[in-house]
Image 1: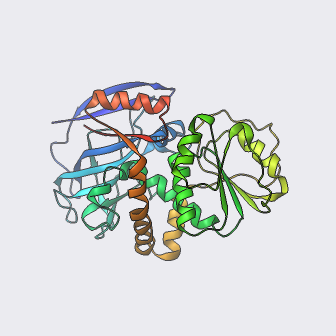
Image 2: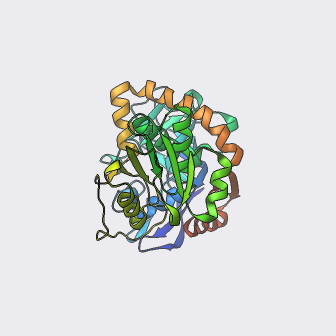
Image 3: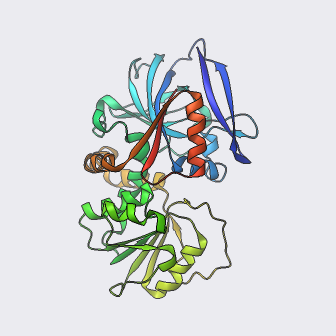
Length: 354
């Protein structure tokens, strides 16, 4: 058996290269070998590639000089184990390479999860190093397993941000309103019973899709952004990462804007520090750090249980509108990556297996 991998050229993300290498003949003590069963490709993975160096995403699964293995979220099955804690046959969910196999070194194992102690990951964020054991995970369910790789990380981002701002402002403006992260936030605000109005800002072409889902108080397009009269204390949640749009909202709301939160870069627009930006300085909402803080504050198991309960409400709703493009094999994966890089319709996501 061999390990298959698809690598990206770090300076030209449209260029890919396939590699094949032998699997280890013998695992070291404490290691497990997993086969990657299913993973998602979305705009989120393109963001990982774009910020591969800045946010160390290339470091999780190192490749040869000039090439990167973009991380994906998905399921894997343990097919060999030299670990006392993790048995062959277990299914896990977590951060994976765009490869067919992976060697992990489980540590800090509990019934719910374990962390990977592989040496090169020691200094990387622990949120990405955690693997959930499906058999004991209260979030996992067979009927929503198909959407878990697509939405798990995005929904956690939207849910925890909604918990943070639900009671701090009367209006939230969110860019890239058709994105899965923005929709996660809008759903979460409604289901938390937040009184704040959520104004979704989107492109004209995506307006009908966003309106059909019905979780925003109002929809505006980028060319018609306006302040609603009742706004006295507002937050901007910027998923688009478009400096011109961010500036326009800052200028429009001025002193009424009390929070400016950077959440993504779906537009992949160039930075521009020359644009006017009155009001609060934008602050990055980095879900790994936020989740770590919540777990420290409330306890890891309790935080995960609360998230799992929210997921059980969100996932069936998301499954009702999400269109999954499924494929098998390296050719399909390579083509799927190209589609994700070019940009996907908001309702579409891709789930692949080797």
